[in-house]
Image (cartoon, rainbow, N blue to C red; front, side):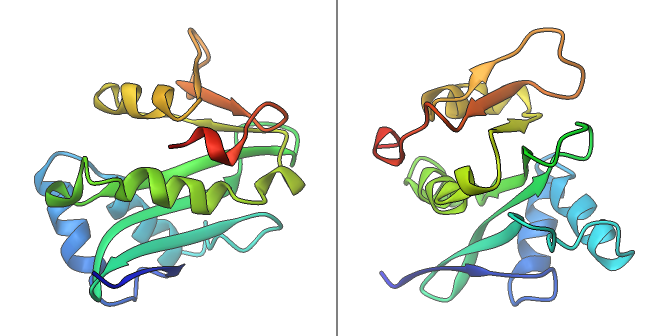
Length: 154
């Protein structure tokens, strides 16, 4: 299988199909990603930010973004956004591989990474080293970059 992880935009081949799949499964993150991209609200273009797609044999199977956290006062706070893995590709390491890639080098920009995960993804994030937070508003999990090591994401 030919695998490629690369920067993307909602205009990339396969994004529409992945967005439609995610919406049919009850997730709106890729719809919001596209809307915010088109209206200019979030283009993943600030220091440390990135939007990546995971391709398997030319098919876009997963998407993940990393932003400065807009809900935190410090630009050193990151936020993992819009992580979605196609249904047929789950439990095949695509999500963890994409997460490792987007986090690689992010300690240069961020002290910690927040996310607001659906409950169905809690075990994924906790297995990747994110710490669950209680009563933290729009943050369910946080990864501290000073304790994070890429090799810990097996």
